[in-house]
Length: 600
Image (cartoon, rainbow, N blue to C red; front, side, top):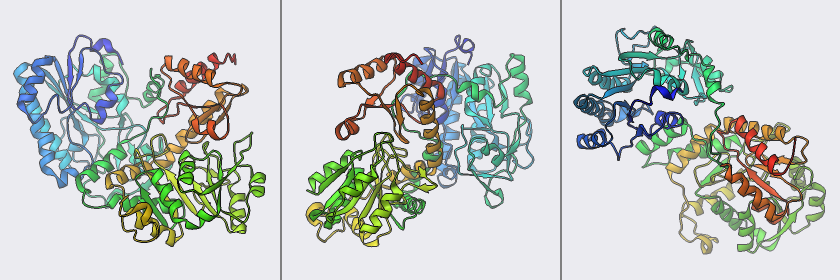
């Protein structure tokens, strides 16, 4: 973005927590750019607006504070729709007019009829739903003020976020990042400008470019959705040509993606508009029910070919409840991979269940199957398979062994959720499957865990404990405590689960890039969820020196404490957040090789 176009302007932006504003902050910043949230500028409070404008004295105001998705909000809660999009906008217009501030208002292409497409700015308007009516209401007040610009946006996020797309509805979507790139060139324009791409196509064709597994659906059964809401962008194109800019081609997103962020976090979560919409829907209409809890448990069980799923508020609680109700373990033994989650070891100790550690293979860090066969005996009643690196190697052999020896297989998929081996999905091997949803995992709701099984007795007992209805033998452990997660927690994990395929593919991309960068260097790269580097012949002091050295370059890595305790290896967890670009991975790899004096 050409920041020279905005250096002589003082720009105030409302709605700093909006999706567009958060993306805008990455490139649209400086001492002359002021982002305001509701506390700093409440669009429904004229005194608040006065105070903020008098303090900052902007020359331009970009009005982003609004109510948009989910669309159903505008049908069920018209009061909020009117307040945010009509009254709030009118208040902003009044105050800008009093101070002669240039106003830029973000509207939508949905205010056109949506029947034929290629709509020009002067074409007749006929909003298709309440959301579009509310935006037109805002536009009406803006147009009373001549020192204003209305942008009618046909805009979406990159990549496509939904699981389904219409094959018979046309659009000319433009990515949000492209709008951000062209925004400086439009700040001094007036009137109304349509913004979209130069390609009109079905929503399904558009979606397939960034989401290969998107499912086709028809718009015929959807109420109040346009069959062709594409906009004519000749006016936009002429403006950009006049200013020697041509940024409507979709390829610009590739150029934008090559910019490397200055700070690289170790494991940041990925939250898209899909999760935001689902959580917002829950917060508006789901406080008095457990709709998303039921949805998640049903779909997550089906995904793993299990009859039952139980969502719990934390992974430690999941493990504790599971091992507590398996009473037969207390007089017997459990075999467990040495690379399992630390909560297993803690809980086994707390419940005084005896364990046998299973060795791992040096080459691929999988469970050593020959050692396992020798280790198990008549007292071995369960095998806990949970792998720090996300390996599911030898699980088919372990499953057959468990079946023959009548041993229960407990499978932890926390670090290999969605991973397949020989076309068999993780989580389908175990008699009981459990999963961790804490921060840093493939999908997360901050904290949480799940227990899945086909055993109705185990499920029912665990559910009684979770819901505070346990009156049997485990009362001494749990009493009348209730561990049922909230519908809010369930909504977040449900939204993350709906994006699981994309998240797994992205992690695979990151892993392969690291492997390529460290090829033939003697450094091993492992992982599916966490990306872990094994650096041989490094003591504790040198590992700490590497971590501190990388931190100086704003690269945050951490020592893998689980592996240090149970396998005595030198591992570090490298940055692998879902938004990590290839150029950033290359930069991290170079810094590590430089410290280790690897010339390649």
